[in-house]
Amino acid sequence: MMIDFKQAEAKLIAAGKRLDALNLAPATSGNYSIRLSDKEIVITESGNHKGKLQHGDFLRVDMEGKPLEDKKPSAETLLHCQLYKCYEKAQAILHTHSVAGTVLTRFFDDQAFITLTGYEMLKIYPGNAKNTHDISVHIPVFDNTQDMVELSARVDPVLQERPDLSVYLIRGHGLYAWGETIEQAEYITEATEMMLKCELETLKLKGAMR
Ligand SMILES: [Zn+2]
Image (cartoon, rainbow, N blue to C red; front, top):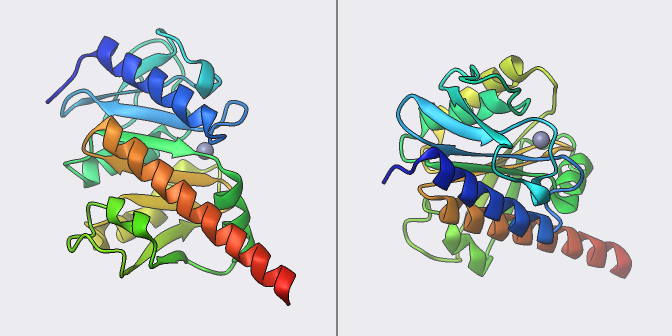
């Protein structure tokens, strides 16, 4: 079901409050969007704190990331557009910056994946068709850059190969998560961030026991 601009703003404002309360939106980091139609998305304007978003802190862009009003969209708008074009079912995208995602992707700085195995919360992923905890999910990790065209070119082949995917990480930077509703995107974000935190805590324990 498509929603209008004002409804989308309200949902993204609420998502920002929630993610900020979970320490997933420090300073002006992150960006959030909702698909309005086949041709338009609504996305956060560049530079605002995501826990303090208000009506007016958003704008429409087309599917190439071009602003449809006189505002500057988030720097990473192209990555949102790419996901909407690749995953027809995606209706909302949330991008968070967390301690766990940042530390893990920097610690394993030569790994193209972070693998999550055996967690009950793996059931959150729509691609987990058997709805079991007894699997491994390989979350792709892409090296960070400020060049979004170059980054999206590296992301593209992985998206094409993984129709099951609903998250990826950018190294030393953050998480992208998408869903068929904003609520689903939030659950996927929260669950993934929780499992990343578990991975980090486990590493710390292993280090302490050595
Ligand atoms: Zn970011």
